[in-house]
Image (cartoon, rainbow, N blue to C red; front, side):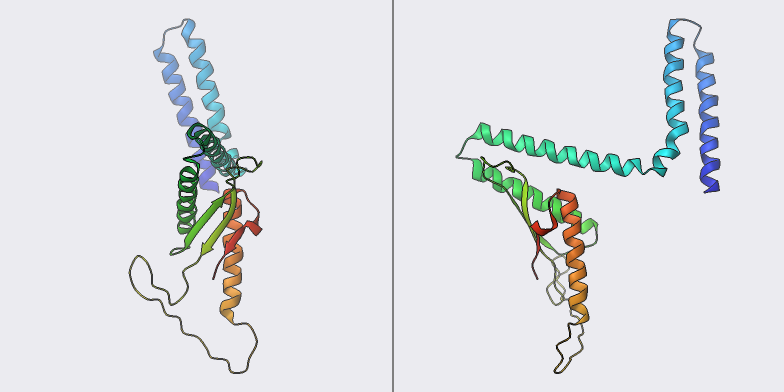
Amino acid sequence: MLEDFYGWVKTIAAFLIFMSLVLKLFPEGKNVKYIRYFMGMVLVLVVLGPLGKLLRLEEAFSMLESELERNNARTEFTRELVLMGETYAEEVIGSYEEDLSVQALKYLEEAGYEGCSVKVTIDADQESEGFGLVERIEVLPLKKGDTDRETGKIVIEKKKVQILSEEPSENSYLEKAEDSELRKMLSEKFSISEAAVLVVR
């Protein structure tokens, strides 16, 4: 924490030295006031930089940016369907669903859920209000014992055999927790309810 503070003070000092050097290089005239104004605005940003980290503004801006990208993609998708007409509608919808499935798969792989298969279904009814929105996401996690798609190896898990026991196994609790986490992540990423995310085992 103290190192961050010293780094912040050094950055401000370096910027002030740079600012005075730039102002000394330019002769007095009309343009100097604009340069001072611009450098002052940059100085304000440098001084308030740690405040953005403290309030996690980068995360908020990245979430806002991803939401805007989704809205733009949805608008572009709708416009493309109107232009192409009914004959190509199914092809475009299928392509859009595939793109969203690939995005969801990449998102899950980045989060550590490798080997899943994802199918995204969107609302294809052009008269509905939710046209073009994600309607449902189906996730099929890689089960233990399934073939790993990238390496071709088989993952085998040792299990305890419980005779005449109806208690749920530890794996079922882990699967439920994993399913809940998958539903939460995908519902936040695609702005849909968790009930619309179906994890198939």
